[in-house]
Structures are given as structure tokens and as C-alpha cells.
Image (cartoon, rainbow, N blue to C red; front, side):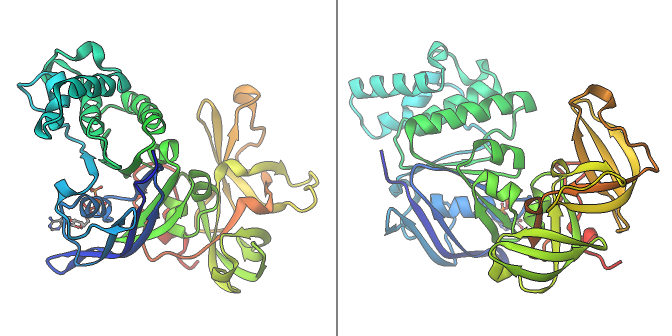
Length: 387
Ligand code: ATP
């Protein structure tokens, strides 16, 4: 089934004069698993509620398969929503909960039986059809809520942190199940989450939002490995972000000066990377450590520093290297050779070595990162402080 393409044009909404969504443009292709990712309060839910019709935009357009639906009430839109709270009817069986919308639409008894059966199969809840919601686990209740939404065959399914109430292990399992269901039904899923790992695991595309704006749209690999702004780099995973000066840039690559070193780097967008002040990010896992007397491979970057803390994390070892900036360079070394994989001791002089494409030039974002997802993410505001 095709369709379910959404286009948001200059969509804006304020509450009591305070902007929640500030004129966003988004193109959500039909049939994709599309995530809106951002910290609490960045406007994700407001955007979703405007698509659903629960919230009226102040201005802008919402097009669904080319038709402006901004004036349509929620029940006239080919859209359904799954919330964090399952909102199942407590006195109805699982079967009756899923059948409810079809009965309301006066669907024939035979078709209702077939479609409810298919929907319960899809979410692996057939064996629980006779139970009441209170006799189910949280994960099972959310599967029923998903079946109840899908049975109506919406062109778009909106999901607002649907796994937020579940424990971490179950959430990981349901992430994969939800992804598999979306692939099977091929309808557009718009998924709101503040969990970067969840968005990376499930999405075809991610729109990273901050302060009511869209900071960057891209595939999970693009967003993670080629972030455009300091906010995106800091929000998605651990990041070494430093002040930089771009010396020259052309065709997606740049020469810049950062941490007292001349570095070859890659840029997201050469047009947005003019010579002058900027920032860079290097992911901890893209760096290797060498003693300063080892030769550095041609074309590689080498940043000199002194080993500080060495933290054994089981699968990897994290090494903090003082590179003369106001915060350390964090390097993550996989423990391929067991606990002794990192031969460098605190106090040793080393080179942090990486390829040019591991160094990304960033546009400075005015928004500070709320780094609640990782202990070692760098606060861009701190990272960019002069010093
Ligand atoms: P969360 O992940 O915490 O749900 P979010 O990114 O989904 O956050 P929104 O719920 O869209 O953010 O809220 C965006 C901003 O709008 C917030 O500052 C919020 O306080 C405000 N807001 C949302 N709904 C209302 C409302 N009904 N009345 C007043 N302010 C609101």
C-alpha cells in the first residue's frame, strides 16, 4: 500500500504567546518509519498532535497525500494515534477492544472477525484475545493498543513515546517488533521519542528537533556520523566537541585548526562551512591511540595529548586524553585483546589518530544539549566556551 505522505509547511503553534513549534517544514515520505527526536519540551508532541488534529496550528499547512487537512477534525483524517498510556477499555476483552473501532464504523460481522484476527496475529496476541487489559503485562497492553490502531487501516500511524512506560529490556524487544510490524503493514509511522538509541534502532529517517525547530533531517547513519550542528552531535551519543577555525573548505572537506592542531575534516554542507569560527566533533570510537614515537599513517590526523583517566568498561576501555583544551578528548577502544587492550598508562604521551572523515565540521547551535542519555557526552556550551 502506498500513500501516507505528510508535508508540513511553515507549521507554527504557540501556547499563551510562548512558541512551542516555530514554523517547521518537514517532508515525510509515505511508508517510512519516521522519528521526531529531541529533548523534553522541544515541540515533538505538539507537532504530532497538530498532524492528528488534536491541536490547531496558528499558521502553516499540513498536507496528507497532497491535501491540506489542517481544517479537518481528527476523525476525518486517515490517521490514528498510539499514546504512551494504552487507554484500553478495562471492562472489555482484548478482542472487543480491537474490534471497537470497526463496530463503531458498522463494519460487517464477518469482516470485523477477519480484521481483528489479522491484527491480533500481527502483534502476536491471538492467544490473549479473551483476557481483560488488567490481566496483561504493559508490553502486551501496548501490543493490543497497536492492534486497535492498525485494525482501522489508517494511512498514517502516529506514536507518541509508546514504549515510554516499559522497562529497558522490554522496550528494546518491542522496538524491534514495532519495526517489523511497520515493515509488514507498510504504512507511515511517525514516532515521537527523546531516546536517541530508540530513534537510531527503528527509523528510516529522523528529524532532530530543538526549541520548536528542526535541526537536521537524515537517516540514522547520517545523523550520527555526519551531524550538522553542535546540538545534533551532542544529542546523539557521546561526542568530543571542540572550538575550531575553518581555514579552507571545498567539496565536502575542510582544513581547520582545533586543539592546537591542523586537521583535515569533512563538512556536512560546504556552503554552510565558510572560513572562520566553527566547531568540530570526533566520535570516541573513531579515534585510535598511538605512542608519540610511532609513525602516523599518511593522510591521518594526529592530535597530541597526555593520557589521564583510563576507565575499563568491559567490552571497551575509555581513555581520557588531555589535549590542552578545557575538556579531555574521550577515546573508546574496543577490548579485542581482553582487559589489557589499552597499553597506555596515565601520564603517557600519545597521539589521538583518526581519518579526515571522522572529524566533522559543525555549525554552532544556539541550543544547549540536555545530556541525560550518556554520562560522557560533552556539553556543547561548555565545549565552545572560549579558553
Ligand atoms: P516531551 O518529550 O516532554 O513530551 P515535547 O518535545 O513533546 O516534550 P511538547 O509537548 O510539544 O514537547 O511541548 C512543547 C512546549 O509547549 C513545552 O514548553 C510545553 O510546556 C508547551 N506546551 C505543550 N502543550 C501545551 C499546552 N496545552 N498549554 C501550554 N503549553 C503547552
